Length: 508
Image (cartoon, rainbow, N blue to C red):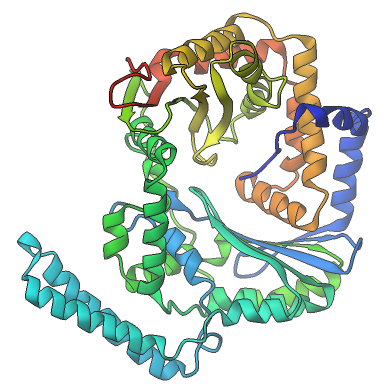
């Protein structure tokens, strides 16, 4: 979830100006939002947030679903991301020339893949000749089903109506869908967006699965991506945050259209969905329109709470990854979920360590010691709904080592634990957080995403403003207390890329 984007040092002057009367401004903003925002829950459980902002005749839409990679298990990893792709493939009336014939062809395609998988999973990989024959049958079935597909018809409808910014993302915690349209096309959005969740067709499933597998291959070609994936697997021994959102390759090769449909039916229920509409609209007109279309989604039971919690880490974990790329150093610490009262303290710590060219990591590692080309830190990795990681990363400068960067990072963490931050650093962190709020609320799309994200995580969109209020109350003592509790060796996972000859300075 994107909350408060960090600002460069050059932006701080602007930030100081806009928050010169921070307390009054916060109250006015919240009051203005409460005056112009309508919150409504449909009978099927779907939450609607409509914010009237008639600055231009355009409207932004953001649909957030309470499902992500954490809901997967080995065997279907990557399935949440796969459904995100499927949500653009259309319905029984959009994206097809003859759905009745297409449906029959897709059933034949599934049957052919099932036969191929049975043979492929036999000991030794099955009979090569038979496997090749079954694969050809399956590929031919794909081609037959593809004859009925109208490529990207869903997107074309949006484009022809003047839509922009159509996109989606899958995270560890949530999946989001967004685009914007002229204000006179709100009903078109309500129909299209509800239709793709009411009546999705998982067409071109295996073809699109190949696209996702290519994404996986591209990620595997990135050394830093491989390192972070290994770090997650080491830091989380039980919680599904350890699983890759894009999925394991063996799962991508094996899961089926039926697996994706079952995942959709279980998790894409109205009670797990929030729709935010922001722009030149009137709530009195839009809410009934949304109820008309989204009210068609059948109610379903909310998925059970996630059972697995990560056991407390009691020993430092360390891994090194030999690679010909430049060295990289990373260390991660377990921290509470974003709903924890100390989340505001972590926001302040991140600002002090990593926000802009005046931050401690940049100043110390990059400018003064010149041992790093980059150095940064942030919390909420890979998600923030559940206890997560505080991650610090540095890229050693040419000729410098991981060990030098490690020592410098540790020096800065010890400084946080034992030395009170200056009044200037604390004030700067608070200013940037408030300015970040204002910047995030400058566009319809930004407002829609922020409102939906905060409402999903906290159950109340007003936490968007209350988070800033909590940051205002963070003290020097809070920073020391949280730093001492978090940045300890037994809570740490270290990961680094080293050259095969060990020249990057790897040690445990």
